[in-house]
Length: 502
Ligand SMILES: Nc1ncnc2c1ncn2[C@@H]1O[C@H](COP(=O)(O)OP(=O)(O)OP(=O)(O)O)[C@@H](O)[C@H]1O
Ligand SMILES: [Mg+2]
Image (cartoon, rainbow, N blue to C red):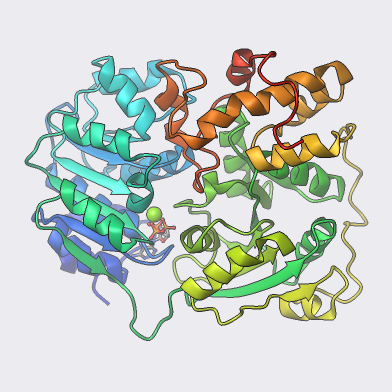
């Protein structure tokens, strides 16, 4: 074990970390900080929850000096708004012993506060691509002196959805700069691509050679489950011994909202984070989850990467992730900073081929997930669920969840497929028969945007500001972050009428 002081970290930073009980560096920090401090370009790869943020953050802060002149000198780019807020908080903490100031620049939020902080001379910007480009285009964000550049979740930032934005951002920062790319997953082709933006980078992989591809602190369970039984299974898992905070991932925003309603109805304290919610509501949910006021967070892949919440004991994949990388990131919301966790994945019959790929890529050796029902004895054993547990908290007061008329089956299928719809508000509207056609039209209108990275449907200049800033993973939710009310206004009632999948 090496202390941060021994790695050459400045005393004020050592002190703010020590005040939080952080004295010894984690392996990725031990390996990257001594290289990052003198300005070596780095591709830093280490498993989820192993401290990559300080791995790049400490060199950034220290290289700007104790008292940097006003103006943006460092840029940290992240894929989602929630991660933006979190990395901002980490950077703000690291700089609390010096004059350096940090600003978070992300979509879904008023411009004023962000612009004011830039005008006040903030030196470190943490941002999502859309809003960064937006403010840069408006000449409110000058990146021409940003000699420190970091892509967190770098493989995500360099995949097709974000790449054009990232290229644009790199064209605005100085050619001579210090560039750091970090992620838990770094596929070979992305590493090759990354080199285009770097100067003689060193690829550092902080992995224990004895460890497998997955986080050793996480127990992975996979079940073949019936979609009609899943809610019941989840509700029983939520009563497992030692169950702390739990993140449940769904494929679609709509499924996320449905599950929140369902679990609330069953007496659980659940909140959601997905792209059909206003940014305010998203932040409220995250805050409630962090504070423990809600202990179940139901999310789309918007929360799959980077999010660090203490004491998440269980991650549940209500729907299987799209690939092995997303699997690792989702599961990695538990088992962080040396703690242990459990990741449970449900595989639908239709998704067995997806599981086959994940199983092979991550070398799980479980090609055939066990068929599992809410009453299966092995479920109780594997997860330590007390015998006799049913999927409803008996003592809980019935909540006031408004039950709405279920949409027609074809409409339902279209919603799942297109990853759209989902707020209870919207569902309430849908239940008023005359709106049915408009809902169908929404799917049609949204569909083009799902394929491309950008909001071709709206054609407005804020496309990146809202959309790209909340890239959701999997390519299905590129526009997850768009505030629902604006989207509704853009809807074209005449575009299609019938749901695509009908
Ligand atoms: N040296 C350390 N000692 C103790 N705790 C640490 C140390 N470094 C970081 N942490 C804590 O570990 C947790 C995980 O860190 P971080 O979010 O940086 O992980 P990560 O590697 O970026 O994970 P992900 O791949 O999910 O983004 C955070 O709560 C952080 O405060
Ligand atoms: Mg991280």
